[in-house]
Length: 296
Image (cartoon, rainbow, N blue to C red):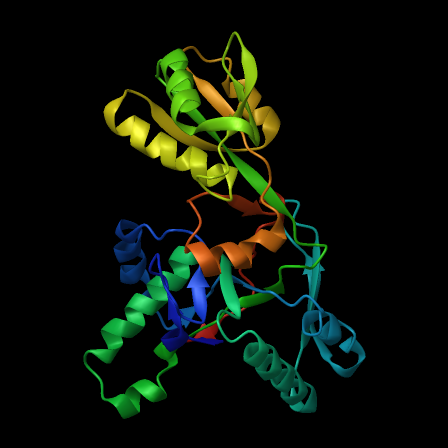
């Protein structure tokens, strides 16, 4: 569990636990209505740590012979197989010490939310609402103060970052590409492949505008579409993007994958990433709802 007092999802947060993407606040109230009266939470929040020595999760994985296996079965929808071991007793205490050591040497930001940003933001809002009608003593021990997460080391080889591409439809693709070239490009910039029904090419986005190509493109498209016709969408997979390019009046952008090592420095120095910067894994590998925790 994480302490929601240490978490802040605002864009320029300086908390020890931070969101990685900008929170769309209008998405929170419907989630609050679900969570606020529920007796349990079934979270899918993936919390990332920047454990370069791999002294947390790898150490724990090597101790399976000291744990009791509590589940072992095949997952639905081509999700593969999963097994779970209970960390308890002395092992849990030793792991707690390692967590404390890691947090102390990563004092500025030990954790970043890799997936489930809006679910965790919902838990935070529910806790803040709870605090309004309860005493400080009640708040200190309230189940609502904490949220269950799955902790993952960002440097684990099994964790892959995939790019999320952009497509703009119902637009004047030539005008859009000309404006992007004039305002956001520079020699020796970040190469980004673009596609229309008839043509394709490469634009070089100016690195002085951001350390991430996706941030430059997203900011441009957000501003451009305020004053020009077009609908933007987010596409997983290169082939899916190229197939959509067969549409009339559409232009797609094939973005590079974000390097995992860039995430913690970027969030620490620049705040939240542009929305839909990366995807963790493929659809069949997404989080399954296995663990639950009582919150009322």
